[in-house]
Each structure stands twice: as structure tokens, then as C-alpha cells.
Image 1: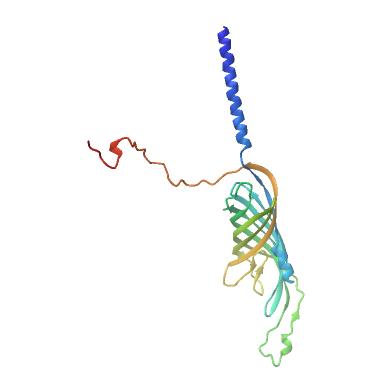
Image 2: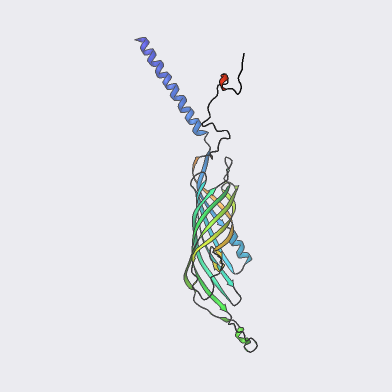
Length: 270
């Protein structure tokens, strides 16, 4: 009886020690896991403010955000408004409106642990709603000698043509570098392709808020921006790494017994 009680106590003690070691190892594993911050990054477009200082006929602002889904993918969106006066040879008009862009980015940069820099490739669907106001225009007359006064501008205060819209797709190549904790400086280059836009006016639609210049013979346009960003951390997740292919694959390779003469590249004779 005493022997049975002693054996049971020894078994319980051994089980407790094994369980304690397992718990300690799990806690150690969790405590040493590399955790990374996930959250919402708020992006302020600096390039539009610089354009305002350079060009008195332009004003604009844009605020964007991206949300980290996993180690490599981000949801992204931008919301902005722009106003610009377009000056042509015989007329000028002002285009003003707002736009939004939604899509995603893929981060192709493998950071060191604790770094959050980005080199991204992405796509956006964009839509703009805007109005255009004709400021003035010149009557054109080939008989300039006898009718020189007809070349004086006729200034008209016309009501804006509202309800105009445009939609397009954008390919985005961007970069963001962490300057300080949660503060980033970045930039992007964008190639846009117009899907549709209103052009039922008495003069060509040469500029769309968010898309910029429109050319008559092409649906493509280009733009760029500089951004200052701030990351709002929300939670943390363990760091993951991209899988790399082995240089020497072992799948399907048979093991060779070097002690067997039949597997050698030569025969030995006595």
C-alpha cells in the first residue's frame, strides 16, 4: 500500500514538472515572438500646398489613409479637392471639385525587425465630381485691320456648369520612410487611365480634379505627390517572413548508401 501511494505521488510530481516545463517554454516562446504594430496611417499631401505657393491659379488639399491587413497588404484611400484656372489662347475657365480614390498597396520591402519602411505597388479606382466656370473669352475675327476692337475680351460672369464627373484607374508606385517613431515621409508616382468623363461643353475639358491634365488624343495621365504620415497603432501581431525557395531541393532525391559498392560510380575487384 505504501509502495502504491509512493508511486502515485511520484507520477503526479513528474506530471506536474513536465506540465510546468511546457508552460514555461510556451510563455518563453510567446515572450520572444517578434511583434509588429498594426494600425491606421494618416497621410497629408504636401505637394499640393507647395503648388499653391508656386501657382496663384491653383489651390488644393488631400488627406489619405491606409490600413495594414497583414505583413504585405494594405487598404488605401485618398480624399481631396482642387481648384485650378486653365488659361488657353482664346478663353480661360476655372475647374473646381472633389474626388476620392480607393484601392490597395503591396509592400515589396522586407524590413528589419522594428522598421516599418515601405516600397509599394498599388492600384486605385478614382471618381471626381466637379464644376466649371467660363471666366472670359475672345471673339476671333480674321479681318483684324477693320475690326480690331473685336479682339477685346468679353468678360462674362456665367453660372458654373455643375454636375460634371469623371472616373479613372491609377497605378501607384510609392515609398515611405520612417523618420521618427510613427512619423513617415513618402512620395508616389501615379499613372492614370480615364474610364469616362463629361466633355459636353463648348470648350475642351482640359483638367479634372484629382486626375490633372487631360489630353485630347490619349486617355492616360500622370501625377506625383509628397506625403507626411502619422501611424496610429491599434494592435500588434507576430512578425511573419516571406518563404524562400531552398537552393538545394531535397524533394524526390533518394538517399545513397556510400558503403554499398553497387551505388558507387566504379567497381572494385579483388
